[in-house]
Length: 128
Image (cartoon, rainbow, N blue to C red; front, side, top):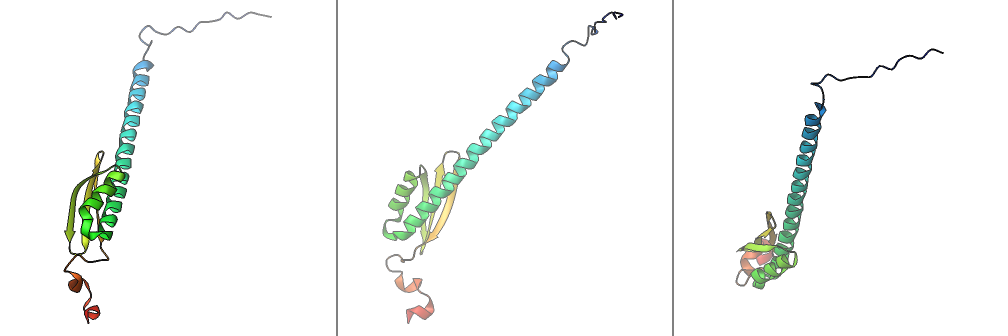
């Protein structure tokens, strides 16, 4: 049996470490993408929670038109949001809330018209 001499692979002196900058770039871009996805998820969560709080506050305010502002604030705070505005236009109640980095607006119609508006809230056929 004949022994073949082993040839060692020697790199040229300028080739050492050329892959390191590429690996560092890929790791940095991966970290940046992960950070962006986490930030996007936080914004989406805040928006969904703000929408839920605004909807609940508007529906509650519409169900108690005589105390619309107080009820809207109570319900929004129970959902972790802060009421920015409560507006009443006829039988409609519009509530705008802020929660975290998001804000949302919701509108609901009261089934019981406000004081003094009972006759105007009815359809013409029902006024008779």
